[in-house]
Image 1: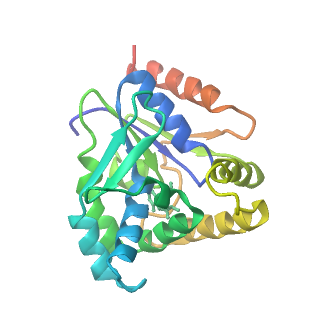
Image 2: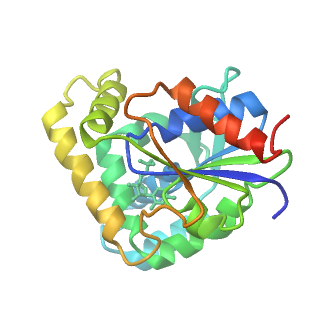
Length: 227
Ligand code: C5P
C-alpha cells in the first residue's frame, strides 16, 4: 500500500458519503466513492445498449471506462465524467443505485474494478467509502469504520438528499427500495456488506455528520494517522 487508508463501509443512507467528504476535506486526503464506480458501470452499460444481464459486457466496460472525479473548490460535491461526459445527475437516482447493486453482485465486475480502486491510495492518504473497502479492497487499512443508522433514519436521509433533485420521489417507495438493495448487498456471495473483523462500528442514528467525522478523526489521531 502506498498511502494510509481509512475505510468507511456501511449500508445506504448511513451517511458514509457526507462523512467521507468531510474527512477527506479536513485532512487533505484523497477520496474514493466506490459506489459511484458501480453506478458508472451500470450506467455505461445502459448507454452502450447492453442487456441488463450481460456480465462479460459490463465487466469489459468496468475495465475500459474512463472516469474523472472532479472535486469542486469546497470539496463538498464532485462532478463525475464518464468517457468525457458529465453524468453526475444521472448517477444520483435510486434507479442508478439499484443498477449498481445488480452489477455489483458479479465477481467479474468487482475484479475489473479492484486495481482501479487501489490506485486511489496515494499520498498523503485516502478515505475510501463503500461496502467492502475494509474487507476486500483495503484489508490492511489502519482504520476501518462500519457506519450504520436505523432503517427509518437511513430512508429519511436518502429521501432528503433525493427530493432536492427529484420532486417525484416518495419516502415509502424509497424505504422499500433501500431495504431491497441492502438485502441484496448483504446476502450476495461475493464481497457481501459485513463489517470487517477489525472495524469500529458506529451508529449514526442520533448523530450529525460533523459529529461522526469528529469521532472518526479522534480514532485516526489515536492511531497517529493525523496530527
Ligand atoms: O454507495 P452507493 O449507494 O453509491 O452504492 C451503490 C451500490 O453499489 C450499492 O448498493 C452496492 O450494491 C454497490 N457497491 C458495492 N461495493 C462498494 C460500493 C458500492 O457493491 N464498495
